[in-house]
Picture 1 (cartoon, rainbow, N blue to C red):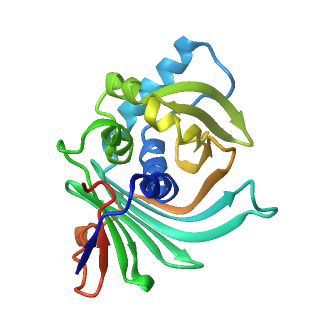
Picture 2 (picture 1 turned 120 degrees about the vertical axis):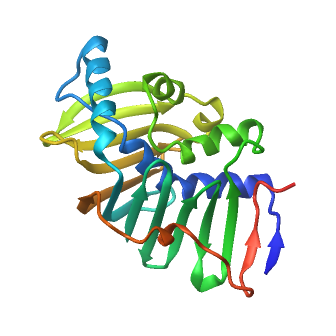
Length: 243
């Protein structure tokens, strides 16, 4: 197994192009919305109620269609995949077509795996991860905020609207480091049951990444080994946070 350490600039691209699949999903599971623009007091009441309602969710999985809109391309890029999640912070996000990529987290590390290329990137998610990187990685490992104070420490509420039967909640990362890459995250939830329907991230350069979820199942039974991975000897492993 080869171990390499790429530079910081490469990590900027990877953590916010690939890792954002994970953080958008994790954020979206813990948010509520209202059906029109409302006063701050109503917004607070709905978010507090939604956080309380998540206590019955232990696992979740769904198919998704991902749409990436880049300023350098005239047409968007489409991909399909499948997502599994288990509280408090484990996930396996598989981008299946057009090419396979897997982002997964278990315990105190995250992997981004490229099976066809025999390559993988390892991201530690523990107390030894320091400085600005910890600010960014905390968004990926957040899972469910334990309470409103934790939620408020990670996000700023920008807007709350209804569009075509879906609540749209606009968020801004509280971390100044994350805001260097991400302008806003929009989460879509069904108006009848708060089910996750979509997520969309707007980057600082104006490009967007959207996920539309289908066939979602709450609390499915699946093997917890799906969150574990041991690389084969022929994989090239890089650690973007390594020194």
